[in-house]
Image 1 (cartoon, rainbow, N blue to C red):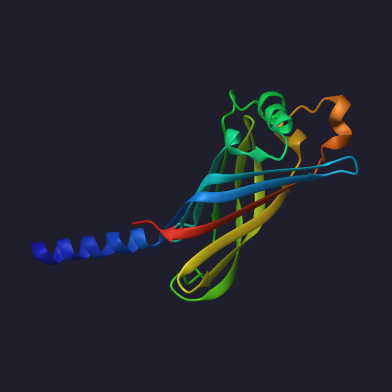
Image 2: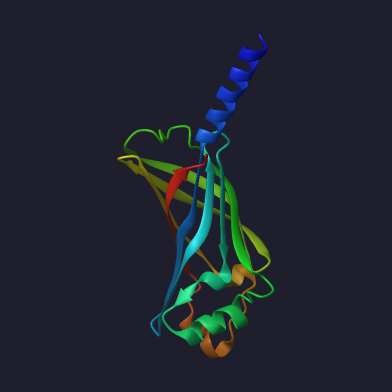
Length: 180
């Protein structure tokens, strides 16, 4: 009887782990377009965890990992706008209904994800449609949403207000692996 109980516990715990997927190399990109200037930055070292059973989605990215085409933009971004020494990371904690996603079979799936994005010391509700594409055992996830820097108390000096959009496009992409 004791061996049967151990076998059941191991079986349940293996299934629970098989329902978690992660990436330590998620790509977060943001893009600001104005008639004066386009600004974009990329962070390829963010992390994502998805728990299929509970629907929990967590994303975390260090602000200093965003890379810009121009070093001066990166410096201003970290020191003046996002104040990355004071607010070192951005996080998203939310939920989605992954019950219709078969992570073991090829297919394309759409999942509504909603939660809270915390950045620059401010937390706001965010929702987006995530796309999960499974092909040949490879699991790719992506989403796109928009934020306004002012909603996160990011102060933009009057001298550059016309160069930074009120509508920043945020794209998140990752290749996910089962968490073992």
